[in-house]
Structures are given as C-alpha cells and as structure tokens.
Image: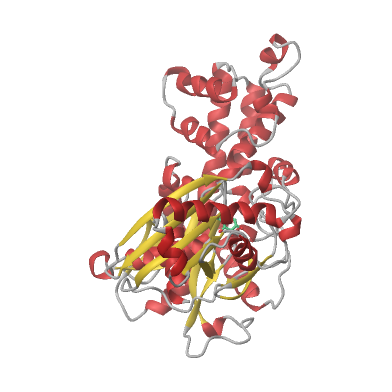
Length: 473
Ligand code: GLC
C-alpha cells in the first residue's frame, strides 16, 4: 500500500540518511582501528579520544579458577548482587538478587546517597543468602564490583569515575574512587566484605565467557566481551607493547584487557552518520557531545530517535494531524515527552506483519496511548527499521575491527573466534544479531583464513566476570 507522495518523499529521505553502505563499513573500520591506537597512546582522557582503559587484568581465565566470591553490579536501572561459587571446571553456582535503583538516586547531590543504598543492598543480600554469623567472624568475603561507566582505572581495585553515562548524573562522584566509595559505606554498616576488584561489565562478560568456554568443545577462542543493551561497549585482550600509555605494566604480563568505551568512538563526528534526529537526542542527554556512537546504537536511544523523528514529521504536517485536531490541539504525552518510548516497543514494531499492521497499532495504543492510521503505522515501521538497521551495522564496526586487530595473537591455532555478548538489544531485538553478522562479513576481518566469527550470548557475564576478577586479586 502506498503513502501519499509528500509523506513517501519525506520517509525516503530519512531512509537514505540512515542507510549505511558496504564502502562506509570498510572505511569506518579503518578509522576505528586508528582510533584504538590513538586511545592507547594518549596519556590523558579527552573528548577526542576513545578512552581505551587498561583494566589491569592481565590473564584470560582458563576455566580452572575456584572459590566463593561476591559480585555487585551497577550499570543501568538495576543493582545486582550475587555470590558465585566457581567450581574450576568451566561451571559455577550463582545466587543473586536484583534491586531497582530509585530514580532519585540516579540523579542526586551526594555520591554517598547512591553508595550507601548500594552497601545496604549488599547487607540485605548477605542476610538473605548467607550465614551472616559466619560471614561476620570469618575472613572478609572478597567482592568484585562491576561498575559500568567510564572509569580511570589505575589498579585492579582502584578507579576514579571519569563521567556518568546512561542517564546517571551525580556530579559529586566524578573524579572519586568508586571502590573507596563502596568500601566506606560497607564499613559504616559493618558488613564484613572487602571490595578487591573493579570491572567494567564488558570486562566481566569477556572473562565470564572465557571461563565458560571450553575450546575443546567449541573449537573457538573468546576474543571480545561486549554489551548491546541500555548502553554499548566492548573489551578485548591487547598485547602489552601496543599500550604505550601504560607506564608500569605488571611484570611478565604479555598483555592486558582493555575496556574500550567504544560508546565514545568518534565524539567529534569525523565519520559517524549524523542526522537532525541524532542532534536533537544528543542535546537531551546529560553527557552531551560524548558517547555519540552509543547514542546511535544502544537501547536507551533507539526509541528516542524514533520519537523525535515522529515529532519532526508531525511538525511538518505529515502525520498525526487528525489526532491533533481531535484532541483539541495536543498529542499524547508519551510521545511528546523524552525517553518514554522503550526499545522493546520498537522490537514489536520491527516484525509486525499483520494485515494493515494492526498488531503494531495495538501496541502503540497500549504503550503510548497513541491511536494511529494505517499510513502512520507504515511510516512508523519504516522508520523503526531504518533506525535499527543502522544501529546493527554500526555495531559490527568495533567487533570486526577488533577481530582483525587480534587475529595475529591466534595465528598458531586453527580455532574460530567467538564474541561473548550480553544486553537486551543483542539478545532480544529481532534480527539484530543476524544483521551484525552480515555487516561483519562485509568488513571480512578474517580474510585469508578459514576461521569464522561467532556471536554467543553470555548471560550473567558481569556477575561471574567480577567474581573472576576478585579471584585474581
Ligand atoms: C556505557 C558505559 C560503559 C558500559 C556500557 C554498557 O557505554 O560507559 O562503561 O560498559 O554502557 O553497559
């Protein structure tokens, strides 16, 4: 069914603006490689450089690690606390509880407001799952802290917050050591836990997937840990001599895990596609001008890009005109207010193939209280697909580039390459993983070998990974 000419023209233009072709992927991969080197060299953090943060983890787990550890994970809307019993045979036992972060603690004055809440939840977790009398009198339990924000990490258990992302904003915490903040609040509560390691969620995902992967069974080496969820980021193992900014590397270390913070790839927009909608979304964020790659890819932003695109088409008189009149001059607030359109809703829109897109209509009615005409639903679906396709293709750039970069580390074995992934977008968004793999094939990082790249979902990566970091402390 066709759209009115004016609308069709407008949508085609937007689709063109969002379209990523094969040449772009290859060029962008080249640029990503250079950006990695620049970040590994630059002694100081700056907006221009991808952070490329040494994680102070110099070994990838073998699956033989053992012991009981705690892990705490702050990264998005939930705080997770777990205890992990590593069995030493690629398996583990995990107990966990999830606590929703009260929105008022995501943006507040004092760092301690948030960190005392986190400490209190660790206390509650221990009371629920462990013999607290025993915990009190024994050696302190070692805790690995997964903290998924850009941190300047100077040792395994030390790191200061560079800046908040993903909707958090607590200026008092910036430039402070987040391990100290958590430890101090645990001490106040007399909880017998020692925070010994700090890890980004992607570092955790890499370590946990590597622990669980038995190369004898999968015939693959785990080379990247990454997240495509609320935010996006990845970690990989870099050869020591390629990290000039590391002034005193641990003795005898061959390499080190790097938390790339690829969300901040190309903050100066030398190569990233940039539409009017991307600009509007960036202006709405607390970290304006930063993490611009993430703002084109991850779950927190996909719905917002769609929402601002729809509002723009409305302003141009192309959609929602009848509705506006019927409501006496307004649109439903869930479409006019930022951040209320969840990526989950986009995932239903993406795949609806019902007659006249009626399913999609119901979903918009239920989630946004937005009645739509058939034309409007077609527009919404085409925009959604354009936005998500761009996101998936862009996601392939760091993955393919890193695979290309590390392939020589594995030149003496014939195993495939696997990427451990976590996050709602890669796990649940229809077709996202497949679209990433197709775009990786275009970049073709393993050219000249018979090896392949696999994306494997690594559930609970950050908890088990933090435990593995704690095991190394
Ligand atoms: C954001 C954070 C990064 C984290 C990612 C995924 O990009 O800056 O540290 O790894 O989200 O959660």
